[in-house]
Amino acid sequence: QLQLAESGGGLVQPGGSLRLSCAVSGFNSDYYAIGWFRQVPGKEREGVSCMRNEDGSTWYLDSAQADSVKGRFTVSRDTAKNTWYLQMSNLKPGDTAMYFCAAARQAPYTSDNCFSTWYDYYGQGTQVTVSS
Image 1 (tube, rainbow, N blue to C red):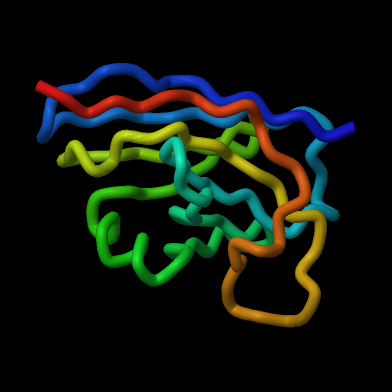
Image 2: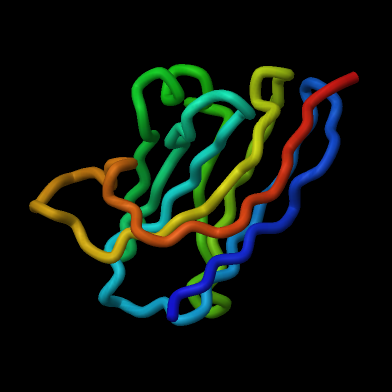
């Protein structure tokens, strides 16, 4: 059974940085990708970024989010620890949200991406609040 556990959220001032962690148990090479998502109360969950397991390629998800986080958010991983990270810099109040990591079991078709509709398992989330 795949389990994902996020950590690293908290309160940060505008312009600050945070690194979120996603520890994944039960993960193996059969899984396609790990993605990061965020959600604000009353709004739909939105994709942030993802990493394809096969080669570590990364993409930003959801075009609206891509424009707002590109150049500020970066996904990385420590394969030995089965842990993925979301490094966030120059944080803005609009980045305030619950952040989730998720795993995609497989890609429905061959693609150079890891689209946000492909994810099967989600963690419980970690809250990020950007405020002065």
